[in-house]
Length: 442
Image 1 (cartoon, rainbow, N blue to C red):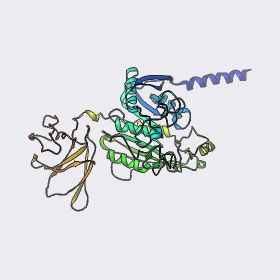
Image 2: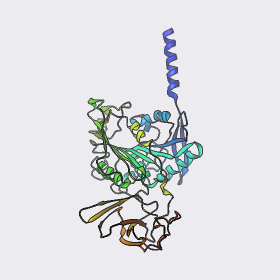
Image 3: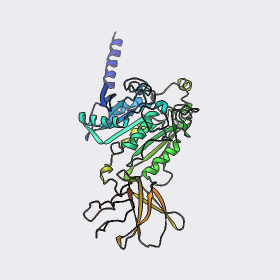
Image 4: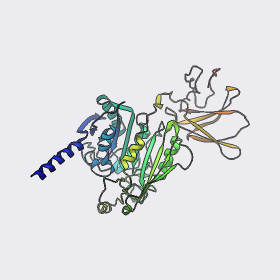
């Protein structure tokens, strides 16, 4: 009898330890004419400064109720209890019926060539409204709002980076590449990005890019390659040139026929980083040590191999946790372009690269001046540039400086700051002449 008593006591104690935070199920929010659904996990403690907020986004054909049942995303409640993270797991919309409450849902990501999974829902607005909803009810740190997800959920994370970089500090998409035919605008701010893909995946999210699932009709749209996705974010964030910081992880399970490695690209504009995880021979499944999926079931579903050498969610959180929102969206609209990097390109040319501005620029103009004279020397060097880079002749000046000014179709942004620290007035037309200089302009 005593043996049974001991077993019951241990079971109750273990259940008490495992209880942790609290799930608040079937929450609703009215947005854009729809009743949208979501789940909330409230951790069992609140860290000083407020709770980080993490959106965990299900994949295509999934839903908020079962998404955390398997794979590395099942680890998030435990991480939330350890770190004091408020989790929100929202539901997408059924692309066939438009129903936001059911269990076969999709996100309206950036793919403009995917009629079979198009929902037309304002998911970016929904997520933004959920940030406000959470801020009104919980003590959250608005500088630490993040998003993660797999497949379609990863694609939606990219859309949030494009359109909510003034509210989202960083994203962590798994097995997701950028859309090849995109309806999303360029990001307005730098944003740190964690990427994790398997190079053995050729069907649901092809490593090399191409049609998603439907190779003949391509009705689910197309994506660029995983490596091209990485290069996009490296270029956008202007991370430090070079090969990056490489890490090969111990092969903890030699029988899973996969290995894991990562490369970190750091010191980008406003501290932005990009980390790229490559799961060699990995498939369309998140890596996990503790939440392993049946190899046979994965093969029957055509999902490929799961890596058991890293816990994907813990790797993602280690990256996300150090990212903060910079608040870079407070300038003029359009304003002065961000960080400018300049290097010699050949014997007689200079290559300029710069980060995006804080407003809605559609083009850029480059002005060249002489530091010995000041703003009086500014002259237009290139106008109407749509890319954030240019190659210019070296020029005869001994103390040249460059000013990159964003423009819209109607006017240009400010020409730096005056001696009082205020933005200088904007020009009335794109690539117009600078207004009269301030004697102490910088």
